[in-house]
Length: 491
Image 1 (cartoon, rainbow, N blue to C red):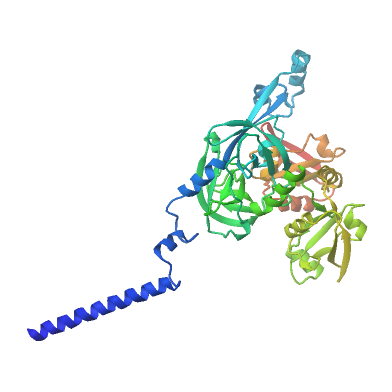
Image 2 (image 1 turned 90 degrees about the vertical axis):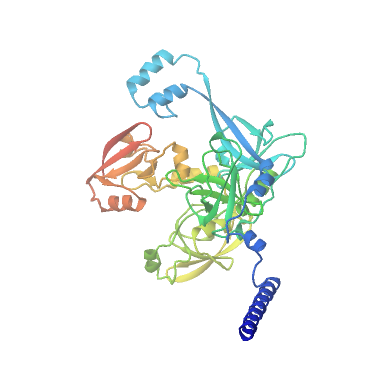
Protein backbone atom coordinates (compact mmCIF):
# COMPACT_ATOMS: atom_id res chain seq x y z
CA UNK A 1 0.00 0.00 0.00
CA UNK A 2 2.80 2.42 0.89
CA UNK A 3 4.53 1.60 -2.44
CA UNK A 4 1.31 2.32 -4.41
CA UNK A 5 0.82 5.58 -2.53
CA UNK A 6 4.40 6.64 -3.24
CA UNK A 7 3.99 5.83 -6.93
CA UNK A 8 0.76 7.87 -7.09
CA UNK A 9 2.52 10.84 -5.47
CA UNK A 10 5.31 10.62 -8.06
CA UNK A 11 2.75 10.65 -10.90
CA UNK A 12 1.05 13.72 -9.43
CA UNK A 13 4.38 15.50 -9.12
CA UNK A 14 5.28 14.73 -12.73
CA UNK A 15 1.88 16.06 -13.90
CA UNK A 16 2.31 19.25 -11.88
CA UNK A 17 5.80 19.81 -13.30
CA UNK A 18 4.59 19.21 -16.87
CA UNK A 19 1.68 21.62 -16.45
CA UNK A 20 3.91 24.31 -14.96
CA UNK A 21 6.48 23.86 -17.72
CA UNK A 22 3.82 24.10 -20.44
CA UNK A 23 2.32 27.25 -18.87
CA UNK A 24 5.76 28.83 -18.57
CA UNK A 25 6.55 28.01 -22.21
CA UNK A 26 3.19 29.36 -23.45
CA UNK A 27 3.63 32.66 -21.56
CA UNK A 28 7.17 32.95 -22.91
CA UNK A 29 5.92 32.56 -26.48
CA UNK A 30 3.28 35.27 -25.98
CA UNK A 31 5.73 37.67 -24.30
CA UNK A 32 8.26 36.98 -27.01
CA UNK A 33 5.74 37.83 -29.72
CA UNK A 34 5.73 34.36 -31.24
CA UNK A 35 2.09 33.70 -30.37
CA UNK A 36 -0.60 36.40 -30.18
CA UNK A 37 -2.55 36.94 -27.01
CA UNK A 38 -6.30 36.32 -27.15
CA UNK A 39 -6.91 40.07 -27.22
CA UNK A 40 -4.48 40.49 -30.12
CA UNK A 41 -6.10 37.61 -31.99
CA UNK A 42 -9.48 39.28 -31.67
CA UNK A 43 -8.05 42.53 -33.04
CA UNK A 44 -6.11 40.96 -35.92
CA UNK A 45 -7.73 42.29 -39.11
CA UNK A 46 -8.90 39.75 -41.65
CA UNK A 47 -8.08 36.80 -39.36
CA UNK A 48 -11.16 36.63 -37.16
CA UNK A 49 -14.64 38.07 -37.30
CA UNK A 50 -14.64 41.30 -35.26
CA UNK A 51 -16.69 41.11 -32.08
CA UNK A 52 -18.45 44.36 -33.01
CA UNK A 53 -18.48 47.19 -35.54
CA UNK A 54 -20.20 49.55 -33.12
CA UNK A 55 -17.06 51.53 -32.27
CA UNK A 56 -16.42 52.27 -35.95
CA UNK A 57 -20.08 53.17 -36.47
CA UNK A 58 -20.24 55.48 -33.45
CA UNK A 59 -17.05 57.25 -34.51
CA UNK A 60 -17.92 57.70 -38.21
CA UNK A 61 -21.70 58.22 -38.16
CA UNK A 62 -21.65 61.92 -37.15
CA UNK A 63 -19.58 62.75 -40.26
CA UNK A 64 -21.74 60.77 -42.71
CA UNK A 65 -24.50 62.78 -44.38
CA UNK A 66 -27.58 62.11 -46.47
CA UNK A 67 -27.84 64.06 -49.71
CA UNK A 68 -31.11 64.81 -51.47
CA UNK A 69 -31.21 66.50 -54.85
CA UNK A 70 -33.91 67.89 -57.10
CA UNK A 71 -33.72 68.26 -60.84
CA UNK A 72 -36.32 70.59 -62.36
CA UNK A 73 -37.52 69.79 -65.88
CA UNK A 74 -40.12 71.33 -68.13
CA UNK A 75 -42.41 69.15 -70.18
CA UNK A 76 -45.08 66.50 -69.95
CA UNK A 77 -43.98 65.19 -66.59
CA UNK A 78 -43.93 61.66 -65.25
CA UNK A 79 -47.38 60.73 -66.58
CA UNK A 80 -46.33 61.27 -70.20
CA UNK A 81 -43.03 59.56 -69.51
CA UNK A 82 -44.79 56.44 -68.28
CA UNK A 83 -47.11 56.30 -71.25
CA UNK A 84 -44.56 56.98 -73.94
CA UNK A 85 -41.37 55.58 -72.49
CA UNK A 86 -38.58 57.91 -73.56
CA UNK A 87 -37.75 60.53 -70.89
CA UNK A 88 -36.18 62.74 -73.52
CA UNK A 89 -39.27 62.59 -75.77
CA UNK A 90 -42.62 62.40 -73.91
CA UNK A 91 -44.50 61.82 -77.15
CA UNK A 92 -42.65 58.62 -78.04
CA UNK A 93 -42.05 57.70 -81.67
CA UNK A 94 -45.68 57.58 -82.83
CA UNK A 95 -46.06 60.51 -85.26
CA UNK A 96 -49.87 60.55 -85.01
CA UNK A 97 -49.69 60.79 -81.23
CA UNK A 98 -47.03 63.49 -81.56
CA UNK A 99 -49.34 65.53 -83.83
CA UNK A 100 -52.24 65.04 -81.42
CA UNK A 101 -50.33 66.40 -78.42
CA UNK A 102 -48.73 69.18 -80.45
CA UNK A 103 -52.16 70.26 -81.65
CA UNK A 104 -53.83 70.30 -78.24
CA UNK A 105 -50.96 71.09 -75.89
CA UNK A 106 -48.28 72.66 -78.07
CA UNK A 107 -49.23 76.26 -77.34
CA UNK A 108 -49.58 75.83 -73.61
CA UNK A 109 -46.89 76.91 -71.22
CA UNK A 110 -44.91 73.91 -70.07
CA UNK A 111 -45.09 73.04 -66.39
CA UNK A 112 -42.06 72.41 -64.23
CA UNK A 113 -41.61 68.95 -62.74
CA UNK A 114 -39.28 68.07 -59.90
CA UNK A 115 -37.34 64.81 -60.01
CA UNK A 116 -35.86 63.93 -56.59
CA UNK A 117 -32.84 61.71 -55.99
CA UNK A 118 -30.99 60.46 -52.93
CA UNK A 119 -27.39 59.68 -52.07
CA UNK A 120 -24.76 59.84 -49.35
CA UNK A 121 -21.57 61.70 -48.53
CA UNK A 122 -19.04 62.29 -45.78
CA UNK A 123 -17.45 65.37 -44.23
CA UNK A 124 -13.68 65.74 -44.66
CA UNK A 125 -13.25 69.30 -43.36
CA UNK A 126 -14.72 70.97 -40.28
CA UNK A 127 -15.67 73.98 -42.44
CA UNK A 128 -18.24 71.91 -44.33
CA UNK A 129 -16.51 70.25 -47.30
CA UNK A 130 -18.30 67.02 -48.21
CA UNK A 131 -17.27 64.21 -50.57
CA UNK A 132 -19.85 62.38 -52.68
CA UNK A 133 -20.27 60.86 -56.14
CA UNK A 134 -20.56 63.03 -59.20
CA UNK A 135 -23.64 61.10 -60.35
CA UNK A 136 -25.39 61.95 -57.06
CA UNK A 137 -25.33 65.71 -57.70
CA UNK A 138 -24.88 65.91 -61.50
CA UNK A 139 -27.39 68.26 -63.19
CA UNK A 140 -29.10 68.94 -59.84
CA UNK A 141 -30.89 72.26 -59.41
CA UNK A 142 -31.16 71.88 -55.64
CA UNK A 143 -28.86 70.03 -53.24
CA UNK A 144 -29.73 69.52 -49.58
CA UNK A 145 -27.47 67.92 -46.99
CA UNK A 146 -28.96 66.27 -43.91
CA UNK A 147 -26.58 65.72 -40.99
CA UNK A 148 -26.82 62.86 -38.53
CA UNK A 149 -28.58 65.17 -36.02
CA UNK A 150 -31.26 65.89 -38.70
CA UNK A 151 -30.09 69.46 -39.36
CA UNK A 152 -30.54 70.43 -43.03
CA UNK A 153 -28.39 72.74 -45.15
CA UNK A 154 -28.35 73.88 -48.74
CA UNK A 155 -25.13 72.84 -50.48
CA UNK A 156 -23.17 74.31 -53.35
CA UNK A 157 -20.94 72.42 -55.78
CA UNK A 158 -17.24 73.18 -55.30
CA UNK A 159 -16.17 70.97 -58.18
CA UNK A 160 -16.82 67.59 -59.77
CA UNK A 161 -15.00 65.06 -61.91
CA UNK A 162 -17.05 62.73 -64.12
CA UNK A 163 -14.02 60.60 -65.02
CA UNK A 164 -13.66 59.29 -61.47
CA UNK A 165 -17.29 59.94 -60.42
CA UNK A 166 -16.12 62.18 -57.56
CA UNK A 167 -17.66 65.47 -56.44
CA UNK A 168 -16.90 67.97 -53.68
CA UNK A 169 -19.74 70.05 -52.23
CA UNK A 170 -19.88 72.52 -49.34
CA UNK A 171 -22.33 73.66 -46.71
CA UNK A 172 -22.10 76.63 -44.33
CA UNK A 173 -23.17 75.43 -40.88
CA UNK A 174 -21.65 78.27 -38.84
CA UNK A 175 -19.93 75.77 -36.54
CA UNK A 176 -17.19 73.16 -36.66
CA UNK A 177 -18.39 69.84 -38.05
CA UNK A 178 -17.23 66.30 -37.22
CA UNK A 179 -14.97 64.75 -39.86
CA UNK A 180 -13.68 61.35 -40.97
CA UNK A 181 -9.99 60.67 -41.48
CA UNK A 182 -8.83 59.41 -44.85
CA UNK A 183 -6.94 56.12 -44.86
CA UNK A 184 -4.64 54.29 -47.27
CA UNK A 185 -6.40 52.18 -49.90
CA UNK A 186 -3.08 50.87 -51.21
CA UNK A 187 -2.48 49.14 -47.87
CA UNK A 188 -5.91 47.49 -48.00
CA UNK A 189 -5.72 43.75 -48.62
CA UNK A 190 -8.18 41.38 -50.22
CA UNK A 191 -10.04 39.54 -47.45
CA UNK A 192 -9.89 42.39 -44.91
CA UNK A 193 -13.03 43.58 -43.21
CA UNK A 194 -14.62 46.86 -44.32
CA UNK A 195 -17.70 48.82 -43.25
CA UNK A 196 -20.06 50.83 -45.47
CA UNK A 197 -22.26 53.63 -44.12
CA UNK A 198 -24.89 55.44 -46.15
CA UNK A 199 -28.50 56.16 -46.99
CA UNK A 200 -29.80 53.04 -48.81
CA UNK A 201 -33.36 53.33 -50.09
CA UNK A 202 -33.74 56.53 -48.02
CA UNK A 203 -33.56 54.57 -44.74
CA UNK A 204 -31.07 57.03 -43.29
CA UNK A 205 -27.80 56.11 -41.61
CA UNK A 206 -27.31 52.39 -42.23
CA UNK A 207 -24.21 50.39 -41.38
CA UNK A 208 -23.22 47.22 -43.26
CA UNK A 209 -20.04 45.15 -43.15
CA UNK A 210 -18.20 42.70 -45.38
CA UNK A 211 -14.79 41.97 -46.79
CA UNK A 212 -12.73 43.29 -49.66
CA UNK A 213 -13.47 40.82 -52.46
CA UNK A 214 -11.00 42.20 -55.02
CA UNK A 215 -8.99 45.29 -55.99
CA UNK A 216 -8.24 46.95 -59.31
CA UNK A 217 -11.62 46.20 -60.86
CA UNK A 218 -12.51 47.84 -64.20
CA UNK A 219 -16.27 48.05 -64.83
CA UNK A 220 -16.59 50.95 -67.27
CA UNK A 221 -17.41 53.85 -64.97
CA UNK A 222 -14.64 55.96 -66.51
CA UNK A 223 -11.18 55.87 -68.05
CA UNK A 224 -9.49 55.63 -64.64
CA UNK A 225 -11.35 52.64 -63.23
CA UNK A 226 -9.38 50.98 -60.43
CA UNK A 227 -12.16 50.02 -58.09
CA UNK A 228 -12.37 48.16 -54.79
CA UNK A 229 -14.88 45.31 -54.92
CA UNK A 230 -16.64 44.46 -51.66
CA UNK A 231 -19.46 42.24 -50.46
CA UNK A 232 -20.57 44.77 -47.82
CA UNK A 233 -24.21 45.48 -48.68
CA UNK A 234 -24.40 48.56 -50.92
CA UNK A 235 -27.73 49.65 -52.40
CA UNK A 236 -29.23 52.65 -54.23
CA UNK A 237 -28.74 55.60 -51.89
CA UNK A 238 -25.35 54.38 -50.64
CA UNK A 239 -23.63 56.18 -53.52
CA UNK A 240 -21.09 58.68 -52.23
CA UNK A 241 -20.89 57.18 -48.75
CA UNK A 242 -17.65 56.02 -47.12
CA UNK A 243 -16.10 52.56 -47.14
CA UNK A 244 -14.14 52.25 -43.88
CA UNK A 245 -11.33 50.01 -42.69
CA UNK A 246 -11.13 48.56 -39.19
CA UNK A 247 -9.50 51.74 -37.90
CA UNK A 248 -12.53 53.74 -39.00
CA UNK A 249 -10.64 55.51 -41.79
CA UNK A 250 -12.05 56.02 -45.28
CA UNK A 251 -10.49 53.66 -47.82
CA UNK A 252 -13.10 54.09 -50.57
CA UNK A 253 -16.12 55.99 -51.85
CA UNK A 254 -19.06 53.67 -52.52
CA UNK A 255 -20.06 54.29 -56.12
CA UNK A 256 -21.64 51.34 -57.97
CA UNK A 257 -23.42 48.02 -57.67
CA UNK A 258 -24.08 45.13 -60.01
CA UNK A 259 -27.84 45.18 -60.55
CA UNK A 260 -28.10 41.41 -61.04
CA UNK A 261 -25.43 40.59 -58.46
CA UNK A 262 -25.92 39.57 -54.86
CA UNK A 263 -23.69 41.58 -52.56
CA UNK A 264 -21.32 42.91 -55.21
CA UNK A 265 -20.44 46.57 -54.79
CA UNK A 266 -17.63 48.85 -55.91
CA UNK A 267 -15.84 51.81 -54.35
CA UNK A 268 -13.40 54.40 -55.70
CA UNK A 269 -10.07 53.96 -53.82
CA UNK A 270 -9.44 56.91 -51.54
CA UNK A 271 -5.83 57.19 -52.75
CA UNK A 272 -7.15 57.90 -56.25
CA UNK A 273 -9.63 60.39 -54.82
CA UNK A 274 -7.14 62.38 -52.72
CA UNK A 275 -5.46 64.11 -55.66
CA UNK A 276 -8.82 64.77 -57.31
CA UNK A 277 -10.25 66.30 -54.13
CA UNK A 278 -7.21 68.53 -53.65
CA UNK A 279 -7.62 69.93 -57.17
CA UNK A 280 -11.38 70.37 -56.81
CA UNK A 281 -10.94 72.23 -53.53
CA UNK A 282 -8.16 74.42 -54.89
CA UNK A 283 -9.52 75.33 -58.34
CA UNK A 284 -12.90 73.65 -58.82
CA UNK A 285 -11.74 71.34 -61.60
CA UNK A 286 -9.27 68.57 -62.34
CA UNK A 287 -6.40 69.08 -64.76
CA UNK A 288 -4.97 65.91 -66.34
CA UNK A 289 -2.26 65.15 -68.82
CA UNK A 290 -3.17 64.17 -72.38
CA UNK A 291 -1.30 62.40 -75.17
CA UNK A 292 -3.99 62.32 -77.84
CA UNK A 293 -3.99 58.59 -78.58
CA UNK A 294 -6.56 55.82 -78.64
CA UNK A 295 -5.16 52.72 -77.02
CA UNK A 296 -5.96 49.14 -76.07
CA UNK A 297 -4.35 46.31 -74.14
CA UNK A 298 -2.39 43.67 -76.00
CA UNK A 299 -3.98 40.27 -76.63
CA UNK A 300 -2.08 37.02 -77.10
CA UNK A 301 -2.74 37.25 -80.84
CA UNK A 302 -1.42 40.82 -81.06
CA UNK A 303 1.63 39.91 -78.98
CA UNK A 304 2.42 37.04 -81.34
CA UNK A 305 1.67 39.18 -84.41
CA UNK A 306 4.15 41.89 -83.35
CA UNK A 307 6.76 39.37 -82.22
CA UNK A 308 6.82 40.66 -78.65
CA UNK A 309 8.05 38.54 -75.76
CA UNK A 310 5.23 39.44 -73.37
CA UNK A 311 1.83 41.14 -73.23
CA UNK A 312 3.25 44.05 -71.26
CA UNK A 313 2.63 47.24 -73.20
CA UNK A 314 -0.19 49.19 -74.84
CA UNK A 315 -1.18 49.23 -78.52
CA UNK A 316 -1.79 52.63 -80.11
CA UNK A 317 -4.93 52.17 -82.21
CA UNK A 318 -5.14 55.76 -83.44
CA UNK A 319 -3.39 59.12 -83.05
CA UNK A 320 -5.35 62.37 -83.01
CA UNK A 321 -3.89 64.82 -85.55
CA UNK A 322 -2.19 67.86 -84.03
CA UNK A 323 -2.12 66.47 -80.48
CA UNK A 324 1.07 65.80 -78.46
CA UNK A 325 1.66 62.19 -79.57
CA UNK A 326 1.18 63.09 -83.23
CA UNK A 327 3.60 66.01 -83.01
CA UNK A 328 6.19 63.77 -81.32
CA UNK A 329 6.03 61.19 -84.10
CA UNK A 330 4.04 58.38 -82.46
CA UNK A 331 1.96 56.49 -85.04
CA UNK A 332 -0.92 53.99 -85.07
CA UNK A 333 0.16 50.39 -84.37
CA UNK A 334 3.09 51.49 -82.21
CA UNK A 335 3.28 49.54 -78.94
CA UNK A 336 4.16 51.73 -75.95
CA UNK A 337 6.27 49.75 -73.49
CA UNK A 338 7.89 52.40 -71.24
CA UNK A 339 7.31 55.95 -69.95
CA UNK A 340 10.31 57.69 -68.39
CA UNK A 341 12.02 54.33 -67.99
CA UNK A 342 9.07 52.78 -66.16
CA UNK A 343 7.68 49.66 -67.82
CA UNK A 344 4.00 49.84 -68.82
CA UNK A 345 1.92 46.72 -68.23
CA UNK A 346 -1.49 47.85 -69.48
CA UNK A 347 -3.58 50.82 -70.56
CA UNK A 348 -4.85 51.46 -67.04
CA UNK A 349 -1.29 52.07 -65.89
CA UNK A 350 -0.50 54.30 -68.88
CA UNK A 351 -3.61 56.42 -68.36
CA UNK A 352 -2.82 56.86 -64.66
CA UNK A 353 0.78 57.95 -65.32
CA UNK A 354 -0.14 60.46 -68.03
CA UNK A 355 -3.12 61.81 -66.07
CA UNK A 356 -0.84 62.50 -63.09
CA UNK A 357 1.78 64.25 -65.26
CA UNK A 358 1.75 68.04 -65.14
CA UNK A 359 0.61 69.75 -68.32
CA UNK A 360 3.65 71.02 -70.22
CA UNK A 361 6.06 68.43 -68.83
CA UNK A 362 7.98 66.30 -71.32
CA UNK A 363 7.95 62.51 -71.00
CA UNK A 364 10.13 59.92 -72.73
CA UNK A 365 8.02 57.24 -74.37
CA UNK A 366 9.62 54.04 -75.60
CA UNK A 367 7.60 52.23 -78.29
CA UNK A 368 8.02 49.13 -80.46
CA UNK A 369 7.64 49.66 -84.22
CA UNK A 370 8.62 47.52 -87.21
CA UNK A 371 10.74 45.13 -85.17
CA UNK A 372 12.69 47.82 -83.33
CA UNK A 373 12.34 50.13 -80.32
CA UNK A 374 12.17 53.90 -80.69
CA UNK A 375 12.09 56.65 -78.06
CA UNK A 376 9.94 59.78 -78.40
CA UNK A 377 9.92 62.96 -76.35
CA UNK A 378 6.32 64.04 -75.87
CA UNK A 379 5.21 67.34 -74.35
CA UNK A 380 2.10 66.44 -72.39
CA UNK A 381 -1.02 68.46 -73.20
CA UNK A 382 -4.14 69.12 -71.20
CA UNK A 383 -7.10 66.78 -71.30
CA UNK A 384 -10.21 68.81 -72.10
CA UNK A 385 -13.36 66.72 -71.63
CA UNK A 386 -15.57 68.53 -74.15
CA UNK A 387 -12.82 68.26 -76.74
CA UNK A 388 -12.29 64.59 -75.93
CA UNK A 389 -16.00 63.84 -76.31
CA UNK A 390 -16.10 65.68 -79.65
CA UNK A 391 -13.05 63.86 -80.95
CA UNK A 392 -14.42 60.51 -79.87
CA UNK A 393 -17.56 61.21 -81.86
CA UNK A 394 -15.68 62.58 -84.86
CA UNK A 395 -13.04 59.89 -85.00
CA UNK A 396 -15.17 56.98 -83.80
CA UNK A 397 -14.87 53.99 -86.05
CA UNK A 398 -18.29 52.80 -87.20
CA UNK A 399 -18.38 49.26 -88.57
CA UNK A 400 -19.60 48.08 -91.97
CA UNK A 401 -23.19 48.54 -90.82
CA UNK A 402 -22.64 52.22 -89.93
CA UNK A 403 -22.93 51.52 -86.20
CA UNK A 404 -20.57 51.98 -83.27
CA UNK A 405 -21.34 49.65 -80.39
CA UNK A 406 -20.04 49.06 -76.87
CA UNK A 407 -20.57 46.80 -73.89
CA UNK A 408 -23.38 47.67 -71.48
CA UNK A 409 -21.71 49.22 -68.41
CA UNK A 410 -23.11 50.79 -65.22
CA UNK A 411 -22.23 54.20 -66.65
CA UNK A 412 -24.02 53.65 -69.99
CA UNK A 413 -26.96 52.02 -68.19
CA UNK A 414 -27.34 55.18 -66.10
CA UNK A 415 -26.93 57.42 -69.13
CA UNK A 416 -29.61 55.69 -71.19
CA UNK A 417 -31.82 54.62 -68.26
CA UNK A 418 -31.68 50.91 -69.08
CA UNK A 419 -31.67 47.79 -66.95
CA UNK A 420 -30.60 45.31 -69.65
CA UNK A 421 -27.49 43.23 -69.02
CA UNK A 422 -27.22 41.22 -72.24
CA UNK A 423 -26.62 42.42 -75.78
CA UNK A 424 -24.46 45.26 -77.12
CA UNK A 425 -25.29 48.94 -76.89
CA UNK A 426 -25.41 51.21 -79.92
CA UNK A 427 -23.62 54.41 -78.87
CA UNK A 428 -23.29 56.07 -82.31
CA UNK A 429 -25.07 55.82 -85.67
CA UNK A 430 -23.71 57.14 -88.97
CA UNK A 431 -26.18 59.94 -89.79
CA UNK A 432 -25.80 59.25 -93.50
CA UNK A 433 -25.93 55.47 -93.21
CA UNK A 434 -28.60 52.85 -93.52
CA UNK A 435 -28.80 52.38 -89.74
CA UNK A 436 -30.06 55.93 -89.35
CA UNK A 437 -32.47 55.42 -92.25
CA UNK A 438 -33.84 52.34 -90.49
CA UNK A 439 -34.48 54.39 -87.34
CA UNK A 440 -31.64 53.08 -85.16
CA UNK A 441 -30.25 55.50 -82.58
CA UNK A 442 -27.85 55.63 -79.62
CA UNK A 443 -29.23 53.76 -76.63
CA UNK A 444 -30.72 50.91 -78.68
CA UNK A 445 -29.57 47.42 -77.71
CA UNK A 446 -28.79 44.72 -80.27
CA UNK A 447 -30.04 41.46 -78.77
CA UNK A 448 -29.66 39.13 -81.77
CA UNK A 449 -28.15 38.98 -85.25
CA UNK A 450 -29.71 36.49 -87.67
CA UNK A 451 -31.46 34.86 -84.68
CA UNK A 452 -28.16 34.34 -82.82
CA UNK A 453 -28.19 35.88 -79.30
CA UNK A 454 -25.45 38.51 -78.89
CA UNK A 455 -23.63 38.44 -75.55
CA UNK A 456 -20.39 40.31 -76.23
CA UNK A 457 -18.67 42.87 -78.44
CA UNK A 458 -16.34 40.20 -79.76
CA UNK A 459 -19.24 38.02 -80.87
CA UNK A 460 -20.98 40.95 -82.56
CA UNK A 461 -17.85 41.98 -84.46
CA UNK A 462 -17.12 38.42 -85.54
CA UNK A 463 -20.58 37.99 -87.05
CA UNK A 464 -20.37 41.34 -88.87
CA UNK A 465 -16.89 40.50 -90.17
CA UNK A 466 -18.00 37.07 -91.39
CA UNK A 467 -20.95 38.48 -93.34
CA UNK A 468 -20.21 38.78 -97.08
CA UNK A 469 -20.36 42.12 -98.86
CA UNK A 470 -23.90 42.74 -100.10
CA UNK A 471 -25.37 40.20 -97.67
CA UNK A 472 -28.43 41.15 -95.61
CA UNK A 473 -27.97 41.13 -91.85
CA UNK A 474 -31.07 40.95 -89.63
CA UNK A 475 -30.83 42.70 -86.26
CA UNK A 476 -33.24 42.13 -83.39
CA UNK A 477 -33.12 45.42 -81.48
CA UNK A 478 -34.60 46.46 -78.13
CA UNK A 479 -35.37 50.10 -77.42
CA UNK A 480 -35.47 50.36 -73.62
CA UNK A 481 -38.86 51.28 -72.15
CA UNK A 482 -40.41 51.30 -75.61
CA UNK A 483 -40.33 48.43 -78.09
CA UNK A 484 -38.42 45.64 -79.78
CA UNK A 485 -37.84 45.80 -83.51
CA UNK A 486 -36.27 43.91 -86.37
CA UNK A 487 -34.02 45.86 -88.72
CA UNK A 488 -32.51 44.60 -91.97
CA UNK A 489 -29.18 46.11 -93.00
CA UNK A 490 -26.91 45.32 -95.94
CA UNK A 491 -23.19 44.93 -95.45
